[in-house]
Image (cartoon, rainbow, N blue to C red; front, side, top):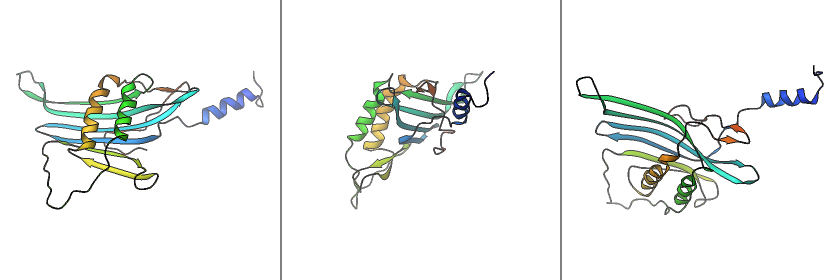
Length: 191
C-alpha cells in the first residue's frame, strides 16, 4: 500500500485532474446548404499538435451531416430520404493531403471587394465559410470569408475531395492520449 504522501500518488492525482487534450483550431471551415433536395451541414476545424521531438503535425476534426431526399429507396422502390452523420478526424502524420490543403489555402489570392455593377448569382450551392487569422490586415487579425463560388469555395471543394480517404473514426493520439472532441454538432461553434 502506498502512503498518502507518496510522489506516485501525487502524480496520479495531478494526472487525473488534468483536462483532456483538445485541438486548438487555427482554421475552421463550414460548408452549409445545397439544393435540389440535397443538403450538407459540415464543420471542420484544423490545427497543429505536437509530434514527439519533431515539428508539429496538422490535425482536423469534422462533424458532417448529409441529407438527400432520394438517398435511399423504400420497399416500393420509390425515393426515400436518407440522412448520414459522421464525426471523424484526420491525422496529418498519416495523410499528407491535409498539409497540402493548408498550404493551398495560404496561396489563395487576397480577397477583394466587388466593384459597382458586378453581380454574381449562385443557386443550389452550399456556402463555404473559411475562418482564420490573416497577416494582410495586421498580424493576427481575424478573417472570415463566405462564398458559394470563388477561390475559397473552390479551395474547400478541391481539398475536401483530396481528404476523403484520410478521414478516420478514431481521434489521433497526441503524446499517447487521444484528442478529445471539440465539435459537438454540425453547426455548433467550437467550445
